[in-house]
Length: 185
Image: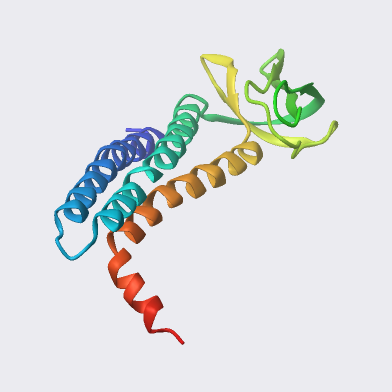
């Protein structure tokens, strides 16, 4: 078996485990919080909400993580690509922020490919003319990912999942944290 395939399968198993296990555990936390008589009604509601609402962040982070894993599973061949353009679009809505869509050019055998990032970014990590690593799908070179761009998405996924993990723990431990804060001068 291919080590890349094994790595994908292991990463996928971990993803499924955490995607199912952590939300289930958060609901158990909420049940524990609601059933405890040592908290007032307002505290129970607030602490239970503190364990459940962050699951939205967790879900978004896990969705980003799934997209990254999926891209990595298909695009397995490394090559060097040149950034030939960085298109930008003005977003409609609050703030009218720009999104940047880098275009890359690379060669597979005798064929030249020019591909555009399907995801827009708030700022461009690459500049026109820059040479970057690019992984592509050997069966369909138009499926690709660029590690330098995935790093930011991975950081966002970790941040969002982290909020979705830390806040429920804070909600579960809220009585102890309140007691600790009340003892401080």
